[in-house]
Structure formats: C-alpha cells, structure tokens
Image 1 (cartoon, chains in turn brown, green, blue):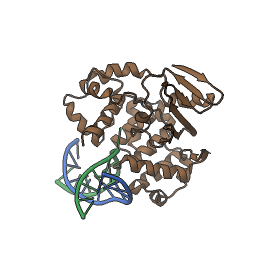
Image 2 (cartoon, rainbow, N blue to C red):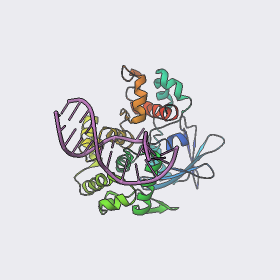
Image 3 (tube, helix red, strand yellow):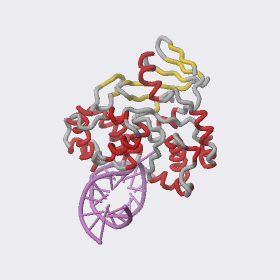
Image 4 (cartoon, rainbow, N blue to C red):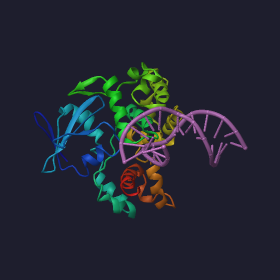
Length: 273
DNA sequence: GTCCAGGCATGCA
DNA sequence: TGCATGCATGGA
C-alpha cells in the first residue's frame, strides 16, 4: 500500500481487500452514509471522514495527514493483511463459496465506548432502526465536529440523561441499560481502556457483568471495539449458519473467527430468509 | 393485523 | 443449570 499525502487529501494506492460498501454498511458500524457521489461520510473517534474509491481503484480520503495516521489507518485496520487471511479462511468450503461475492469486508477498529453502546442498542432490533436511534443520539447529544456531523456522545454527556431521555429517542426498553452504563463509565466504575488490556476471558467476563450485556453483545463489542478478532458473535442469522457446522468451527478460522463470521453473517442475511 | 430484528433479565423448576 | 416469558419499536 502506498500513501500519498496531498494538500487537501490522502490517496491510498494498492490497498487490498477493502470494499467500502460492504465494510461500512454491513452491520458492524452504524453511522456511515453513502453520498450522492457514491463516497461515504461518517464520524468515528471524534473525527469526520469522507472516503471514496476512484475509477483507478485508489482511495481518496479527506482528513489531515495527522488524523489519517492517528485515527483512520487503525480504524480501517490497514496494517492487517486481509488478503492472506482470506486465503486461509477459504480452506473452509462455505466461506470459499461466499468470499468472492463479499470480498473486501474488513473488521473496523471502533472506539470501545461507541461499540458497546451501539451493540446494546442493537439487541432484538434491526439494523435500519439501530441506525436511526444512534443518529438521534449523536445529533441530540454529541458535540459538533463539522459538516453537520457530531461526535458520538461521551459517557459524561450521556450520564446526564434520564432513562426517559433515552426512551424518547427510541431506545425502548434498552434505555435503562444505557443509563446505568453511562453512569458507571462516567463515574469510573467501569474502565473501558483497562478492559482493552485484558486477556480475552477476563475482558469478556467483565463485559458480561454489565447490566444489559449478554454473550452476543459482549462478543460484538469485543470484536468491533476491543480488537479481539477471535470473537465469533452468534445472532439469529449466524445461528442459522451454524447448522452447516455440526462439528464446530473449522481449524482454518483460528484467530480470525470474527472475520469469517462477517462473511457468513452477510451471506446468511442474503440467502437464508 | 402478525411477525421479526446483530438478546437480555428475570422467575421458576 | 436450563427453560419460558416479557420487553419497545417500527418495518416488512
């Protein structure tokens, strides 16, 4: 991969295995919106980004060089060799049959707080509605960054809300979970950065002790927000896929179960109605 | 109108 | 430890 730092943009050449639509709109992050010029706009880690792919296959990004290196390079997991990982995952016949259709899905390294809140909202909910709730949450309680985009609201900001404030933006019964989480994180009772340094078992145990966080939400947060690529979240769709794996997950997934899961999740949603 | 969605807490056996 | 039930909401 070659990084060209221009005056007003960053150009990435030779990036392997990155499909913007599949990666940004596959249900792992909920704030990305495709624009009329087919570029994608969104916000993460307190920064705004617009990114597009030109006809030559290069990626054009709008941030400063500093923000690219400090935030977006890691967010898009650009230093991980997905091409090699996909080759390994293809040893499994089901993944092999799906990977060409969905090639280019990456696991985004999201902010732990945003990921945890987002996946608490996601429970027993559909992706379209999850996006709406998170948009209202950010528009109402996040600090403005630029271009009409707000940052994801901080724990402190959300701790000032009441349960009914959460419910007013459509969280439903999850409002009480969010209220307690915001209070505990803002108050220092839960330290998300510390969880990030833990071994997987301890990190998962800690997340499971949070009110409103069960196995599925914990696995999604660990995979998408805490960089544990070996987590394999099982939702209603993946549960259907698992019928194809009566012996358990194949050896070739080892260490990258979460990446395999994204391909299988996507395939299931499109094929197992 | 009914069913369902990137589930979880709770109560009861 | 394992299973049944209620939970908010809006799109299909």
